[in-house]
Image (cartoon, rainbow, N blue to C red; front, side, top):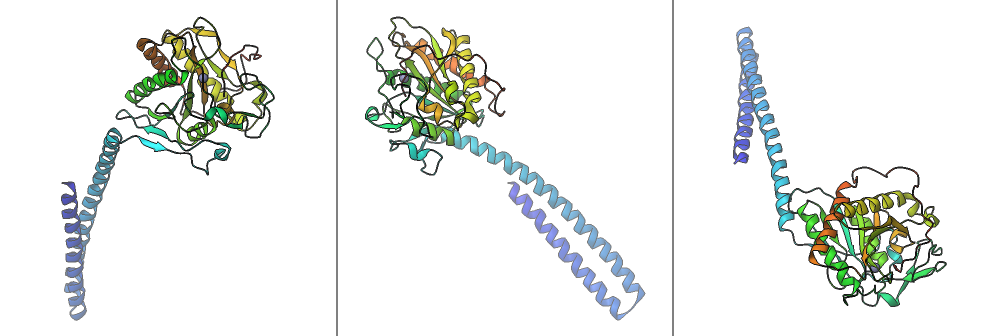
Length: 358
Ligand SMILES: [Zn+2]
């Protein structure tokens, strides 16, 4: 509708300019032939023509500005509508991305979901831990500089290579860890989308052929943070509570960890605080230093969160509680800002044992 109005005004302006030009030319022509009187008439005609031209130009400018504003609003609405209807998009490893060539398993795809409304333009990488068939028999470098792993676990300290994706443990009720982590990841995805966050589901089904390096590199390049969901294989008979894997001192000077470890630990603190506020028990002071492949290749805030262990009773209510707690932690994280506060605090010595594997 507006376009018609705009073209009419543009037509008026062009017509006005044409008329003014013709009159001025005629007046100028007669002025040449006769003298003063014709020249005076030409002045009047010319002034009128200039006035008409200015009027037309002003109208056209106002109309153009209004049209521009309206077009921008329409574009925004269309983008939101498109996001609401958009099919989830497959995201694959791009070989040109930094560290991509360290990955050994990357035939699979992550899936990007866009929030339908109240869009924050923040993408949360949700990585349901484990779930890569064959990942247990492939090795990848623990660190991009090929230095040795600094803490123990299933892959001992001093190793240069670790399992590309381990199988994970089995819950006491027989549920494999990869199924438990997917249940929580899906609940978290739904809650994030409802709250305006876009979600990169690193593993969107039972299996994804992406090793821990591929998962990390995809998040680095397409998400604002990377949250890997796990349950700890600590062998305990009771649920000891949730904690996050903090960055060990031994890799804080190693690139890219050196640029990023504060952000990782801050996100981890936010997540455990969010979980606590949702009523989830927190283990110890909420963190444990472990040297993980995920951390070692991350260039964005990136955390492995251990929600519980094999003894966790993973009811629907429990899953919802985890999702709500993680959402709270994400909401508190300052995505707009750069790196968080300086200085390491609360450094543990890594004496605790955890079976969490790369
Ligand atoms: Zn795990």
